[in-house]
Length: 339
Length: 235
Figure 1: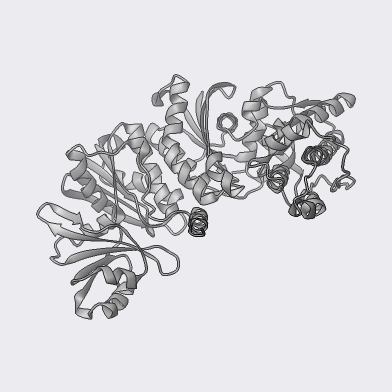
Figure 2: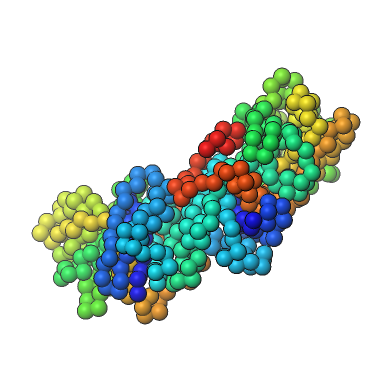
């Protein structure tokens, strides 16, 4: 089955063609970073406007690049849950129109479910059940994946997402937006043990994370020096901050895997591209005989191939939507498969 | 040519079908917050009531706004994707022009107004009726009612969804008998009529490039631009 996937939940306008939930024929992503960079974050109204301008071109390009025409499309999958409401709406409006005009099934996908499938696209051999950590600029969520489309939440962030902390520290250090890649690069030149930043909730029994306090601790520690024009050890701050985030994410996720009795961990989302995170996860996993999987770099950040793959799985389980599909900006992943 | 018209800039999903100059259907579905959830079902029911299928439609008209920013994004996206999927042409129509067209039989200067939603701001434009339709005779206006009154030097016919709201204020600012009001909402059939005329003379828009007519920049960009202007003003 050839599925056209559409993703517009935040600031990436994306469309992709995926055959049988496995083979990516095209994966087109138009990012809007240049539009949002000067604001240091995504501006919802600007994102929604850009999606409206780009959506047709991106879908057309996905068909061209995949060597297919509209009449080849057998189903349309779209991110309908979790994201900026004005952004989600553009993708869903386009998807509904395609489904209606082409007379093919429509399926709404939860954005996080898309990320879970990004890793399954890259590594179809990931065993079930497994534990999946999704870490990005908007999300930090730890779930037990019992089966495809069956999730149980283990934990998540109580405040900032992990990627959001990267963005905010990068903004403080004036490294630009988005902050993840900038800190990753800078950290390779720094000393990870230069500063002993807090490891929030590391010792807590729950699987909840908190990154807001870590961010504030760093800003408070250096803001006077920064204001006084002092030259800060940027590399060491970046490396030590990254180490604190990585240590908490890895420790809690591995404990979740142990306590759930699974031997595989899937790490997804934009932050899963972070090199230090991959290194520590893999090394620690090896010591405990737990295999850790990461998506291909092209599937870490928001994309529509993962939405098409998730949509394919949902359709196979009979979770098609009708033309009354609407957007839901905020809904937990684990309750949404009931509908 | 059968043309399907869509306007979602106001309080309703307005959908109409015309055959050249003849109106076959004109519906306004009150949507509250369900414009997106209802839009395809609304289009399907209007076509179905008239025993039409999408394949019978020869072109599409889309109300571009100004109006609700979220609302117009729904209509514009649906309109452009319908045209893309069917390979038929599309023409975007200013919602202000669609309103003014409803007063095309008036001899007075026509003033179309749409509520801009914040701080008593309105979108407006002036039109005049001529031998082949109406013509826009002013730039688009974004501002308050007193500012609009200053632009108007003669008796007008005011056209708006909530015309009575503006009638008393404008009536006081101008002389009261200088303003008459026509209360009407952006309509699907009107958008389709205006689009049909243009599509028949080959004036279609680039389908994939079709974009809303916002008339106002987003708040964040307005803030940055204001900051820039202020910075430039300081020597």
